Structure formats: C-alpha cells, structure tokens
Length: 210
Ligand code: BEZ
Image 1: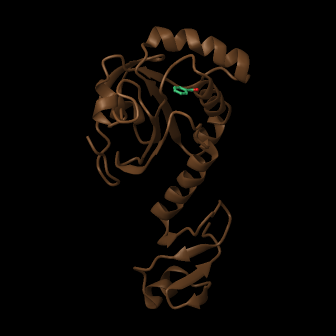
Image 2: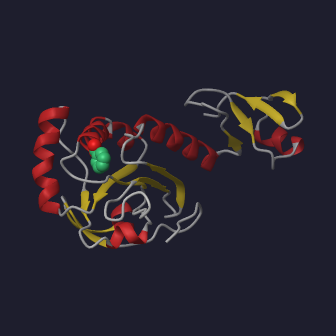
C-alpha cells in the first residue's frame, strides 16, 4: 500500500514491548513517529534505537510519541534491548512493535521486495494530531537515519501548522522563515504587522513567529 502525505495514517492493533496498543488511541492528541528497522541484533539498527532513546526528551518536548517496528517478535526486541542499553548507554524508552505477521509492515508499505523481500526498510512516518501523515521517508538498510533531521522537520511542521509560513532550505528552529506563496501582500500585512523583507515578489522573508 502506498501512503501519501495527507492520508490518514492507517490504524492497527499490535503487540509491543510495552503491551498491546491500538495506534490511533495510543497517539491520542499527540504527534507520532512510526519507524521501522530491518532486523534485531544488527549493528546499524542498534545505534539508531540507542540514539532515539537518547533524544527521546526532545520528542517529549514537542509532544511527539515515538514507536519502532521490525518483523521480529516482541520477545526478540526485549532481549535485544539489553544489548542496546549496554552498548548505547540509554535503555530503550519507547515501545517497539513485534510485527512477525507483517500486518503493520504491509499496511505501511515498509517491505520493499526489490530491496529485500522479507525485511522492512528504514521507513519513517510522522503523524499529526489529526492522524494525517505529514512526512514519509525511506532509507536503505545500509544507511542509519539522521534523527536530528526528523526533529528539525517536526519543528517545521509544527510551526507551519500554526502560522502561514514555510521554512527554507536547511532551516532550523529560530531561523528566518518565508511567507507562504498563497498569502497575498494584503493578507501578509494583517498576519505579520511587524513587516518582512521582500527579496523577490515571491520570496518574502521574516523572523520566525513566536
Ligand atoms: C544493520 O542494522 O546493520 C543492518 C540490518 C539489516 C541489513 C543491513 C544492515
């Protein structure tokens, strides 16, 4: 199944390392990050899960719940978590879905058969409080993800959900932003009375709104 931005994130019920969850109910009013890794007890995945555990306070600050997944069963995840805590310095502090029957992987198109016909690729889905998919990215098994980039995108998503702005290349929280192209100058005067800098008629820049 192809999941596109703006689609409702498919709901599911699954066993996790923190008990059985119903995805939408578990998300509640929060944002969510659902991410898959190819296989337990593998090196790149070990570093990824350790890093996500380490920066979980950053997700918490942004009201984002994080949940991992692979096609290994929950008891395998639990055994592997001891290695992650030992080698990465932080215990895994978010649930991991055991998807042995590939129910969730298939629902989210996390198995790419021409890459590997049994293991999940490194998928990331960011879901908004409205349960809609806001970001979807896919990395190959050989490349560990940059989870700081996921936080950066969440900052942009949360800002642009609140204000009629867009964020430029390599933007990070606190940098200048761009007035959305659908906003006329007249509307911009109402929205941003402090003014902005017109670089081109289609490129209007202003400090990040509070
Ligand atoms: C890894 O996490 O290191 C890995 C997992 C599956 C395939 C290749 C690498």
